[in-house]
Figure 1: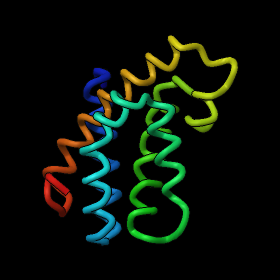
Figure 2: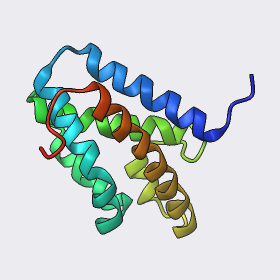
Figure 3: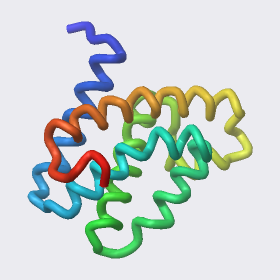
Figure 4: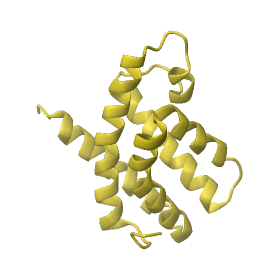
Length: 132
């Protein structure tokens, strides 16, 4: 069956949200939802590289916050790999000398589109306030 890129984004985002929900951890759900809701603004304000470096700096440890950051980072990394835009860890790829600014712009555009689906499904499925 032939699927559009938008359908692939939606399907992958749905699967990501189902994984978060399957953890049955309310605090992780709340934090993940909050981080997803803020992610587009962070990327547009600070750039993809700085946003992902920030997420990586926050995901050490076992707190719900750290786990939520790690899950979101992993979802972004896996999506870019699935789209064949990267072939290594996304942060390493962004800061690699071989990566051009055009490559980063393309990846940023893709992540913004993917995150919009994550937001929609997180709003529908995960616990937590929209404003958290």
